[in-house]
Image (cartoon, rainbow, N blue to C red; front, side, top):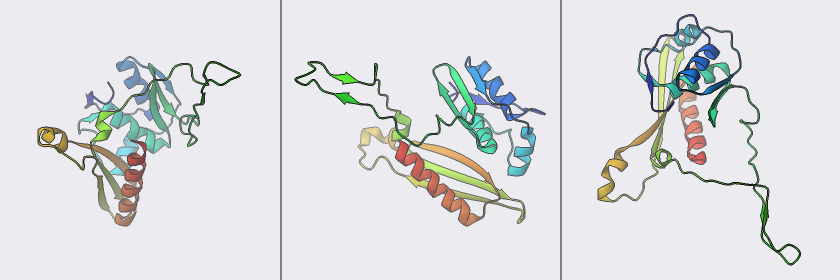
Amino acid sequence: MLTDQKIDVKFPNQTASQIATQIAQQVGLTPNVQATTDLVGRFFTLDHVSLHHEKTMWTLLTYLAQHEGFSASCSAARLYFGKFSSALSNEPFLIQCDPPNTQRPYPTSNATNLEFEHDLTLAQDVKVRVRSYHGDKNAVYTSIATASRTAKRIERDADLAQSVQTFDFISTGLTQAQCDAKAQELLTQISNTS
């Protein structure tokens, strides 16, 4: 729902936390939002971008989270917007499953219910675009890094082969070389998690 719905709304004199709360309520999610104090108009001025471009709600939320040093995530019917260390942990959760043995004729596990899903959009080719406005140099820099996921294509999948999952990131004060490095770093992160 957040990745599908486009938003083309102005948020004058509001903080990122107020906007996150409004979006969560608009789509029927319970907001778990940590309060922020900076008005978002300041972000858009610094980044030399306009909010008038139609973006998805999720793109706007992640943009605001980046500027606040927060994370944005959804779990069940709840939107998390803030610094949640458990959601940001780099440690994987180890699922243990022991088969039956002579002392115990049944398997054991630390999971009671396990479901796997595959996000087919992440099976597409990936493009990461990093944009930055460097105030000291009064310049805008853009870098694009791509990775192909569909090395083997068959003709009937021509539409799938043409689709690309695009990730946009905006940072302030980066040079062109720093934009290039950031795009590669983010592409590696996205490619490793998909």
